[in-house]
Length: 286
Image 1 (cartoon, rainbow, N blue to C red):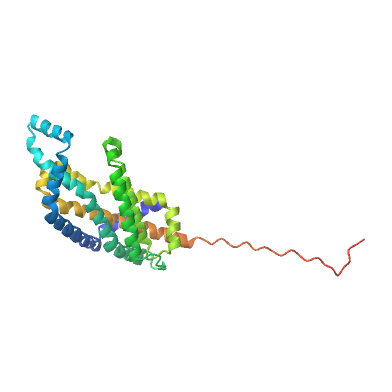
Image 2 (image 1 turned 90 degrees about the horizontal axis):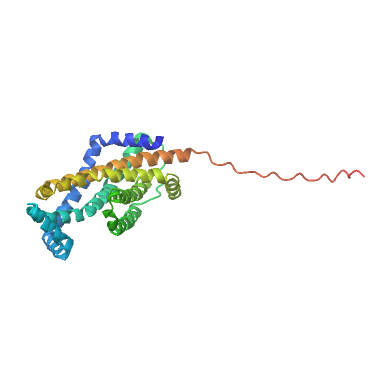
């Protein structure tokens, strides 16, 4: 627990450094550009397809009639765009996570290592392509888990538990590899992931709950759709900065745990002494 809290406060302090704030702009510009391009190319077609799909739902038809009965029929025009934005958000979150992992985390690791662990040897147990494979494989599993767990989100307690757990697991899987790729060997990384699996998962889950904050932006309904050109970049920046904070937290924790692991004394080998040979020069007494 001491290492977990110590690395938390150190990560929080690093987030206030101007260099780290500047680093957050790179994935922000990239993800905002990709998101704006996708919205510009596919928004109209996606909205038409979504409305056609939702028109077959009798439950939504009842909802629309109820809105009209309470003089809120104008909200019908914003429900479909708002729902489409909510469906796109997981992809935006995933893009933000991957952008931070691939573009920012290597610089974060080098900065923390140079300041706190200059004597820590670089075993280079990971690579960029290993990071890509690890990230994409884990992302596919997380998206599958999100889709399969959707029916459970209708149960009130689970809707605030399952998504952060899934995003926390994904963040942990991606960040642990990237933060230890340069300094830890493969054996050391696997040993640290086994020994510290619960604290590492806890860091990811906390980041998952922090990442839920941008979702509150879309709870304002019609205003969220009207202000989407401003709110979407704001939400992406929050996601980006949350993942940068998580990257710093994983880095401080992982490198400190790696340094402690290398300082552990190796178990001394057990030396078996040979049995004394019998003295055959003196005959045994009768």
